Length: 185
Image (cartoon, rainbow, N blue to C red; front, side, top):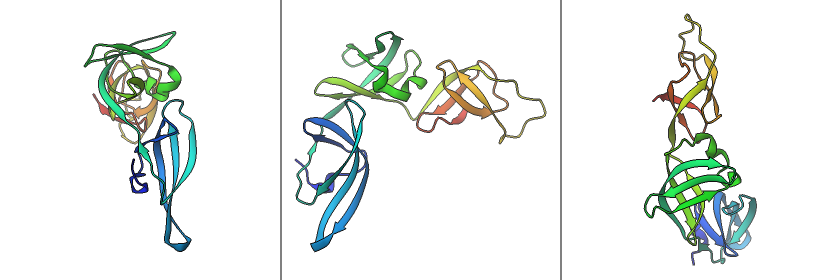
């Protein structure tokens, strides 16, 4: 058990035997020197969000989330298939679970696997990944200014604004958090 001071952003909490991630935490002071923590929580099993306020006397249990290295193998009708590189065990995650991460996954990409009670619940991507441009309009020769952008569609169907010098089949580094162009790979 933990005390309310442990309610911080990105912490994993266990509420009614369900793991939650703290997305936002706001420290409030109310009458009589009482402290409260108003939080926005994300359910790590079904991705719903909720608001919950913790009082100063509340005891909070920290969720036991473990992490392991994994590789993306392939996608099929049943979902996205991965292999735990430590145990060589293969597992499947639904498209709803990995959400936007699917736009950054290329076969044999390394990811970090999140497990709760020994069951895979999600993956974490690297902050930046290299993707191959599948389609983009040609840039004009005279358009060398770096602030001008054009759309590029990658082999994973992600569309990102890139500089005009980027061509089809170029490998580009993309930020997985903001979906923005970083550099050539």
